[in-house]
Image 1 (tube, rainbow, N blue to C red):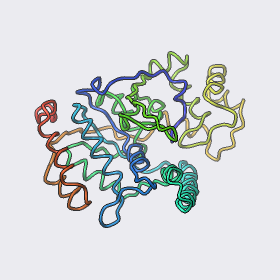
Image 2 (cartoon, rainbow, N blue to C red):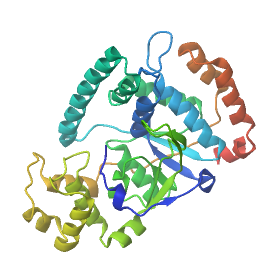
Image 3 (cartoon, rainbow, N blue to C red):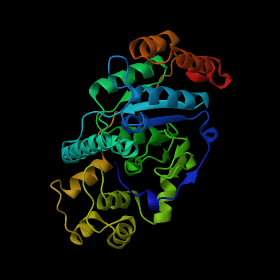
Length: 337
C-alpha cells in the first residue's frame, strides 16, 4: 500500500518517550489492516470471539492504543471516507491478491505447513464496514477522538499536521508526505520486539520520524516533484512505471522538473491520467474544520464491549484499564487538555 519510496527517505529512529505529550493523527485503515494481518493464530486463522466474529482488529486497537496512552501519547484516529473513483482498479487488484493468498493458505494448511499458512493468511485480511464501526465504538469508550475524513484518511492526517492541530501523522505508508504533512512517524503501531520471518531472530522495532523539509532538501526536489516521484514509482491510485525504482525515478524528476516534461520521457499506460492523480495529491478533499476533543475513558463500557460481547479475557482487560486510570502521566487533567 502507498508509495514505496522509503529507501531514499531520510529518517531518524526515536523513542516513544520523544513523543510524550504529543497529539498524533493515526491513519486508521492502515493500522487496522496491519492488526488484521499480524494478529493471528499459528495456522493463520484470525482471532475470533465465541460467535465466530473476527476480533484481531479490536485486540490490536485496544492494546496498542493503551500502550501509547500509557506513554502519554494523545492519539487522534482518522478514518477513510469515500474512495476516489480512480482508486477502483487498485481495489480490484488487491481483491485478486486476497483470493490468491486464500488459495495458498488452504493449500498450506492441507500440507501441514503452518509457517507457510500463516504467511499466506496475512495477505487475506479484509476490513469490513462492521469492523470499522466496532473500532469507532471502542475508541469512543477509550476517550480517543475519531475523525471521519471525506475521502483519504492520510490526506486528512496531513491537513491536521499542516495546521498544527497534531504534531505528526502516523502511518506505515508515505503518502502523507505527498499530501504535504510536515512530519510522518512510522512503526508506531508495531513498536517492540518482532520476529524476522523464517529466521527465528527477534529485532527491536522503534518509531521512525520523517520530516518533509529534510526529505525535500536531501532529495533536492520540491513538494510537487515529490508527488511526481511517487507517481513514477506507483501509488494507491496507479501502478508504477516499469523499470523505474526510487533512484531512477528521482534522477528523471531532477532532470525534467515538471510533470509535463516527465510524461514525455515515459509511456503512461494507466487508464487514469497522471494529471488527475497529481492534482488529487495537490488538492485532496479534506474536512477543514475539525474539533478534537479528548474524553475520560469508560471502563464499564469497555468491559461490556470487549468481555461480554467479544469474549476477551476479563482479567487482562481489567489490568489494562487499571493501568490507564492509575497512570500518573495520564491523569484526567492532562488527558483532557
